[in-house]
Amino acid sequence: MYCVNCGVKLSDEMTKCPLCGTKARRPESTAVLSAEAPKQKLSRDGVFFLITGFTLLVIAVSLSIDLSMHGRLMWSGYVTGAMVLLYLAVALPIWLKHTNLVVKIIADWAAVTLYVFLLERTLQQNWFFPVLFPVLLLLGVMTVGAAYFSLKHPMSGLLIAGVYLILAGILMIMMEVLTNAFLGAPAALLWSQWVMLGLGVCGAALLVLYFCADLRQKLIKRMFV
Image (cartoon, rainbow, N blue to C red; front, side, top):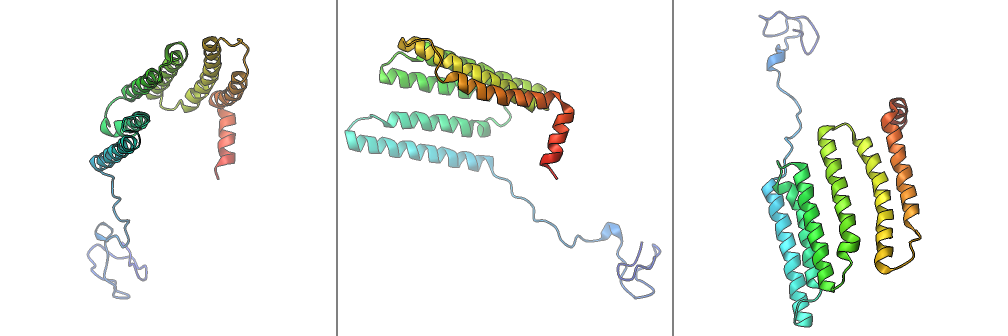
C-alpha cells in the first residue's frame, strides 16, 4: 500500500503517511470518485402499451374519417389491415420475448399472407393464388430457413445474407414469370434479370468474404482503425 499523496510505501498497520500525514486509503475500501449513472432500461410493458395505444388510435381515427366522409367503410379497412401488420411486426417480438425466432417469423408471414388475401378478395380480383401466394410461400420458406440456420450457426451472417440475396434474385424472376402468365403477356423477361444480376453480384461478394478469411480480415483492417 502506498500513500496517495507522496507515494511513500506504507505498512498495513499505518493509518496515515509518516511523511506528509495524509490518511491512508486501502484499495478495498477506496470509494469510487466518479461513477456512471445507472442506465435505465425500457419497460417492456410500457413500450407494449404505447404501441398498442398508438395502433388503436390510428385505426379509430381512420375509421371515423372514412365513415364521416362516405357514410360507410371504404378505404379505412386497408389502413386497419396495414396497422395490424405493423403492430404484429413491432409488438409481437416484444410480447413474445422468449418465443423462438422462427415462430415469430411464421406468425408475421401468416399475418401478411392473410392481409394480402383479404385485400385481393376486397378488390374482387384473382391474382392472389396464381401470382402472389407462390412468391409469399417461397419468401416465407427462405426467411424461416435463414432464421433457423442463424440460430444454429450464430457466426454465419455473411453466408446467410449471401445465399438470401441470390435466392431473392431468383424470386424476382419467378415473380415476373408468374405475372406474365397471369396477364397472358409474352414470357420474355423485361426487368427481373437485371434485379437478379444486382442481387446475385452482392450475394456472391458476401459468399466470397465468408469463405476467404484472409480477404475478410484485410477488409476489416481497412474499414476499422
